[in-house]
Length: 184
Image (cartoon, rainbow, N blue to C red; front, top):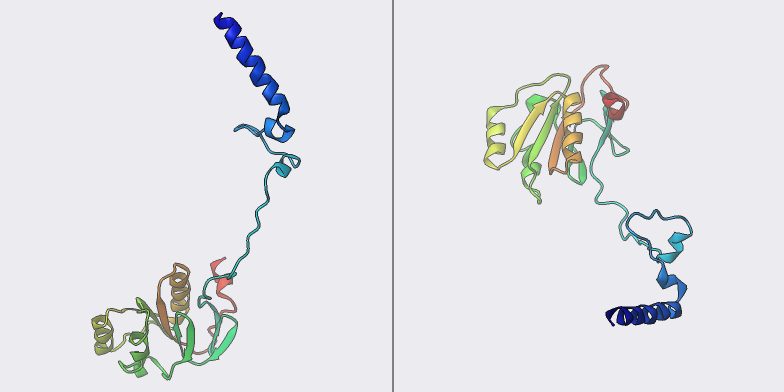
């Protein structure tokens, strides 16, 4: 009796399967690989991008004794780099760097975490009251020679840090046509 009941329900289920459209009978299983014909079973997805890239970050492409190439823009002489801006910096050498010349770095929002200072072809010491003023305002200062400062600034920006740079071009014949070539 139980066997007859099981067979009857089996035949009813089988007959109801015959009525279903063919597309519902087969579905890919977990181990099934999709072929181009299987792709037609799925609805295609379309994506519209509202903004192709995020905010453009600053990147120092190259430098020489006259200035810098930053995001394809040529800058002559010393410059100050902010997260989304580029400014001429009115200093001649590391001895001209004062608390007032650093004031643009602590006036900004969002607050800059670190300022990388490039002092030319050699690492020079900055005045202690300038470093103390930056520390009191919660901004770290990293003083390096200009080639290393450029690389450090690019690295920190690539990490997504809120970084500023104060760069003095190295004198003489020091130049690099592309910082990308230096890393290779």
